[in-house]
Length: 169
Image (cartoon, rainbow, N blue to C red; front, side, top):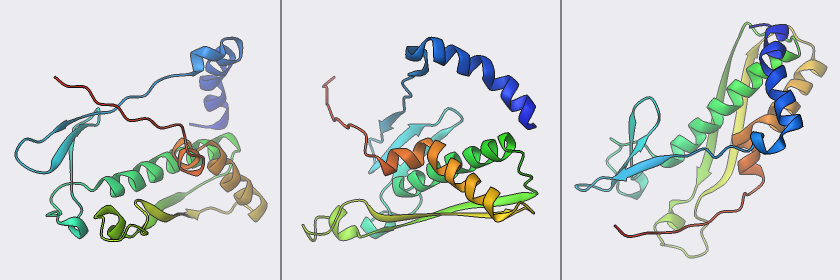
């Protein structure tokens, strides 16, 4: 897809959102089922069932997906798609590229071993390795706009309102 095809695809969508801002607000959903035989949760991904379980650092077998890894994978996926869309829109040629993320966790917090240890990532780093001849100023603009428009990055960067609820069956 080139820049003009991307603009043509997105133009009517952008026009709709300009005239009807409420149409741009969509609720994304995820659902999982608790496993009744082990500490795991089966998450519906839309393509398959992904089974998440405890990380080996908390006693897991490593056979199930770790939700922390899944968070980093979601960041990589979103950042990669966003970077590719921005590069296309700006007509920055990319021959190839990789996106990677890594994050630091202190499992003492998750396991309640140390009340002062944080629960969750204390830092996350996102990396792009690009094969391109684009000049540095174009790459800086690409990175700036990718960061600005990546939903997962911005969600992590600006904490959304969160709530938790339970119901019984």
